[in-house]
Length: 327
Ligand code: SAM
Ligand code: SF4
Image 1: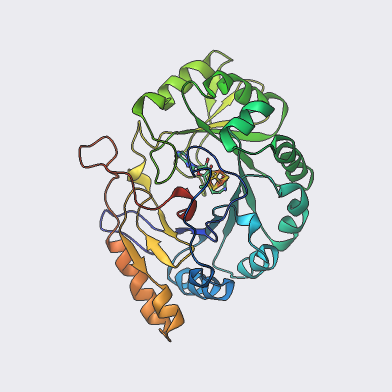
Image 2: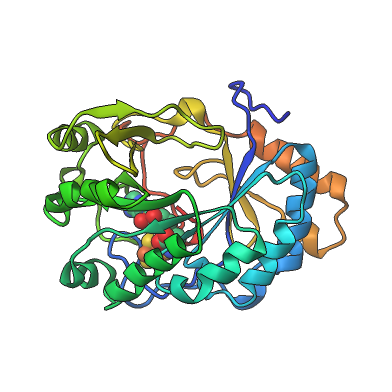
C-alpha cells in the first residue's frame, strides 16, 4: 500500500494525455495564443502504459484519463483497451467535454472503459457557446444520450458553477436527476493558469449551491462508494439520478486526497495547486529501469503537501494551465 507522510492512501493516478482541446472554455484556456507542448515532448501511449504497469504493481488501482480533451488524441480506443488489460487497475475512467462522445461512446465501452465524466456548464445553447467559445451544445447533449444508450453507469455531469454566468441553472441541472440516471456534480470555480482572471466574487460555494437544491425536495445523503472522490453525494426525493458537490475552495477536501497527476509531458504533480513536478520522461526515454520509475513514484508521494494553499496568503495561481494538468 502506498501511504503519504500524512497517512493518506495513494491509489489514484489522473493522466492528462494531451493538452490540446476542441473547446476554449473561458475559465480554462485563452481563446488564442495558448502555448502548446511540442509534439515530441508528449509521452507516447507505450511510455504511459509502461509507467502505469510499474505504478500499478506498487498500489495504483484507479486511473482517470483527462486532458485537454482526451478524445482528440488519435488511438485512444486502442490505448484504453491496453490499459484495461492491466489487472491491478480496477477502475478506469475518462473525463471528456463530450463533443466527440457520440462517435466514441460505443467503442470506449467495448474497449473496457468503466465510467465516464462529462463536463457541461450550461443547458442553454447560447450560453454554452459563450462559455466554451464553440457552438457544440447539441453534439455534447447527443454524446450524453449516446453514453446512456451504450450503458455507461454512472455517468457524471460536471458543472463548474460561476456567479453571474450560469448560477441561474443550478436548479435545472439538479432537475435532470429527476428524469435521467445521471450524477450531476457541482464544482466550485477554481483559479487556474490561463483561464480568465479568477475573482473570489465569481465563486459560488457548495453551501450556497446546497441551499438552492434543498428547495427542490428532500435530500437524502448517499453513502460513499469505494471509488468515490471528494464529492458529497445526495439524492433528491424520487430522483433516479444523484447530486454531488465538490467544494475545492470552501471546504478542504485534502484530508482524503488519494491522487497523483501525470502531465502530457511526463511530470508527476503532487497536488492540483502545487507546481512541484517530478520528471519521469527522462527515465522513460533514456533507459531508466522499472525500479527507477518506482523510486520517482515514492518521491512524488513523499512530497504531497498536506493541504492546498487556496484561502491562505501563500496562494498563487499554478504555472501550468488546467488543460495540461487535467483538472
Ligand atoms: N476537456 C475535458 C473536460 O473538459 O472534461 C477534460 C479536461 S478539463 C481540464 C477537466 C475538468 O476541469 C473539467 O470538468 C473542467 O470543467 C474543469 N476545470 C477546468 N478549469 C477549471 C476551473 N478554473 N475551475 C474549476 N474547474 C475547472
Ligand atoms: Fe477544453 Fe476541458 Fe479546458 Fe474546456 S475545460 S477548454 S473542454 S480542457
